[in-house]
Image 1: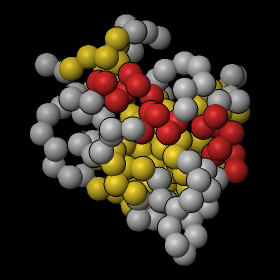
Image 2 (image 1 turned 60 degrees about the vertical axis):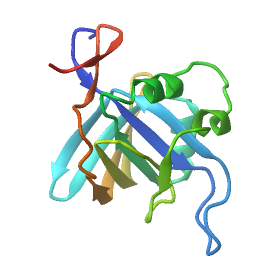
Image 3 (image 1 turned 90 degrees about the vertical axis):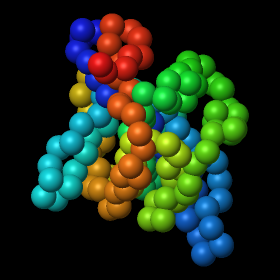
Length: 160
């Protein structure tokens, strides 16, 4: 499967539900290459999460999450959120420009090609992963220059 070229996204969520005074709790993020559009009507996307990962556990409880489609200029961000081990998510978000999603409260990474705010519709166990299907509640495409960040044969790549 390392010979299948995949786009690179950052999946984010906020640990606590939104309250009237704004989001409380910790932001969580992870790099993913197992992401796809499922349906245009209704707008559905799917992300594959390693079963038992922090993001998988969080999205089992918190139905609101977001996806930032990373540009070729965001290789460092992708690498940072792909780190193995128990690095504090607070440190992962340090020095990264992001906005808070209007609908989900999840971080939307600045400079991304597009961002999607989603609500979980369905979770399906598939081997050692959970496939999370989400309904797109809000989408933006800010007109960022450059192409997508791709992953091929174990490395981040630029198309061209």
